[in-house]
Length: 125
Length: 166
Image 1 (tube, helix red, strand yellow):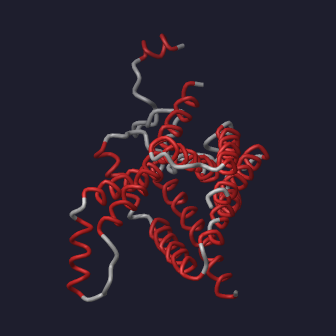
Image 2 (cartoon, one colour):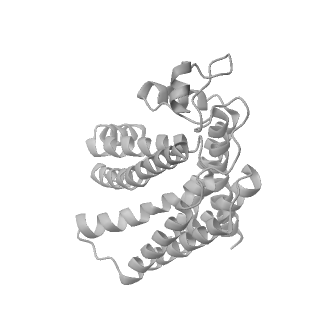
Image 3 (tube, rainbow over the protein chains, first blue to last red):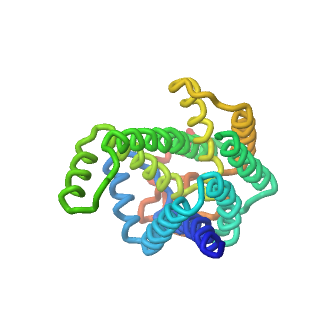
């Protein structure tokens, strides 16, 4: 069980942490106004020069491999509610680490999404 | 007012791309890899044949390109929108997956799953009514509310245009 808990920790924290780092990296790049292909390519190339981007890729890869590891130990029905939990952790991280203002209205929406995602997976069997 | 609308429109357009390209990419890649078949041995020659089959499959390439489009849309929208806005809003992909399954693949979607999908829709609708960006634009960066300024600090707009606008 300890092994599962460690993997669970990595799936949620590394996976969501990676996306938070990605968000931090892209805020550093600044708002995109020009959506022509060459301009988008330049934005992506610039993103690869930001340290947060590399941290994001490292954390997301860790989260992905932790998910693969967990799938080899437990069945999908155990693993998937974790993805519902990541919506909650993601908003909490956005608020605490990125300074986003998560209003009660947004929290309500996030909690409904968590609940809905859990129901969708429960209804899959 | 218009700039707020623009911000909303481009946020929703990119989230729309995410919820379409993400599931479509998963489906293509899944189908493509099943066509390629399982990797039975780690011998170098078998590995070479496996990757050769994978990278010559149109279905695998369609999956890779769709997922690339998903990732580019995701990174672009995060240049201005809150993560706590984009992440729950992109859960609309679950709705797309169920609708694709039901209408395109004739899969049976259980009532519990439809109920979950309805709850997700309500959640996304509620999140979607909050402002996409709640953090301040760092100094020196042009925001969606203004055009990028020239080095002089003022937008190069002819005086008569300003008068007409005023």
